[in-house]
Length: 399
Figure 1 (cartoon, rainbow, N blue to C red):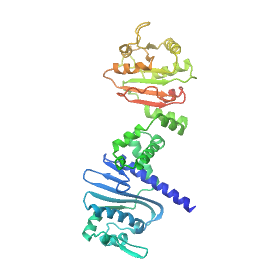
Figure 2 (spheres, rainbow, N blue to C red; figure 1 turned 90 degrees about the horizontal axis):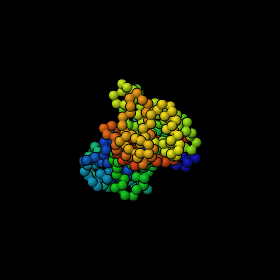
Figure 3 (tube, one colour; figure 1 turned 90 degrees about the vertical axis):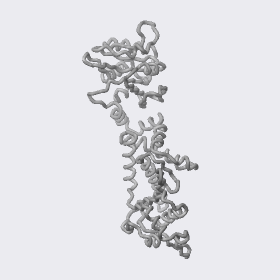
Figure 4 (spheres, rainbow, N blue to C red; figure 1 turned 135 degrees about the vertical axis):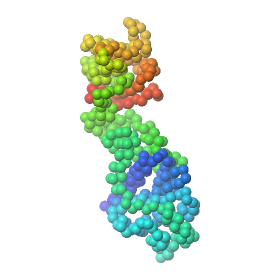
């Protein structure tokens, strides 16, 4: 049992350091931060580097001897460089005993409690072995911070989750179950890179790498991690919860159609999208309607859908100005007729780019709902929100 507890404490210690590293990055002003540099974590500013030694002793009472060796290691680095460009910080969590340490530290206290020790019956005075005078020790102490009132594992993790929510603009459940595992994976990759240059990173690069690692498989894992209803509600709240004053944007809904959905169900879904994401009243100064592309259905079914919608009094603009004409992007981007419920249907995925490029002076929003993997990824000019779904019917619950 003792060995098992020791192993668990060691693992928690590593995660504690990883969490601290990620937190330092997300709360930084974009300074470069090094993992496993001079110390566990180095914060590099323009004229100063702070080397942080991180200790997590959940089951240990604080004693001066516990931090003596880390202090000596920092002093050793100080003695070799002896410049004002380095600061040192010991950051630790202990079960109790913190009252034993009195701040500020005196030279005599540091020499007695941290630098004087015995090994195999031999007494060592480490400051003398390094050839340091009291004035030099005083300078070291002025550049040393000891914080043994560090946050607990859970407190620090909660603070990191808040930083993730703030920096990545996500919900609590996304921060905990989607982004936090991505961050741990990235931190492990950085920590195990043998080249110290690759262990240097700033906040903006860190966030960019997190987002770059967010792939469709992660989305699918996230959906599975959440209960289905909760996932759909979260997606709705994050992307489709709008008030009465909806912006008149050009919205594209790209929907993957599964083999089980019927034509009537697709018609109902399209009608719902039109109802919620259109404004075509006679008093609307800038009328707008959604663009819809249905992926995975045949031309025969697409024609049937248009007939059903038209039968319900919904006008169809598909970019074909007359029978058997070629697709004309300039036609589909025309403003809808005020007072008439209209939907813009894009027949082929290959024409989406052309439609986007034909829109001028208006914001474009693209929402892609995919079953297996994203089917539209060509645009580099506009933001795409790609949302994993298990069935096409779920789109209605999300929007």
